[in-house]
Length: 95
Image (cartoon, rainbow, N blue to C red; front, side, top):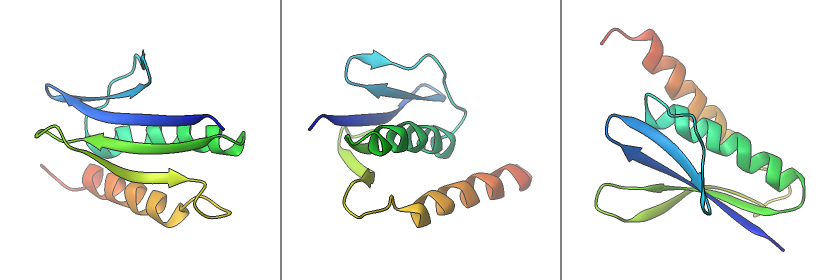
């Protein structure tokens, strides 16, 4: 079974997504936006029968798995809703 790992990482003041040797062209203003997009990509792979996960590369170089498809019969939608809720809250609060 193929395994796809989506890596969310900070590049300056933007966030990017990488899968294998492919760098996605879009960049994101914050981590939660990049995470939501990476989860959406990983869900498509999981729905096609591939094992997929989303990891974040932290500033100290550590990688931490934040989301994984395939552990349960359904993807962890509670985590996705939590990320979306945080993103919406951040957008509606004044800086």
